[in-house]
Image (cartoon, rainbow, N blue to C red; front, side, top):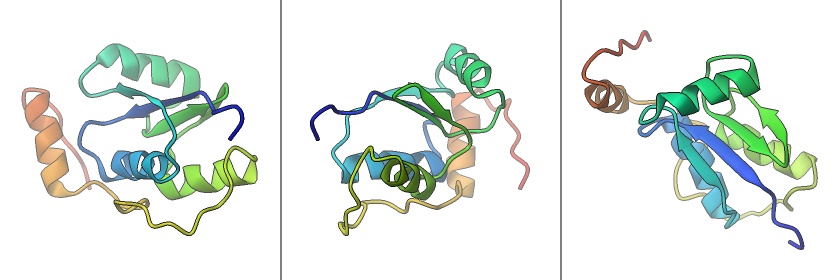
Length: 119
């Protein structure tokens, strides 16, 4: 890869979808800036302003914001847009998996128990 992509990922600390996005970046050995929207509410605000919506993960690649995306979708987008070449290597985590009840509990704990998740 001649020019590595500039990637900013708006992710949750504990989240199946967010971990899937991280797994894709690890699979392709892509450097990225992670902005944890649970630990830093300013990052959540920034994500919502840039993406026009509140759902995460959101990933910005070379200035293009891709909102509410799974690892599987971000991988497909990067392949389709010539950012990466497809690889048959396995990701080290599921790339299309929802958050578990345990992940929701961990996020709620981190926020002082004020977050309620609706299945």
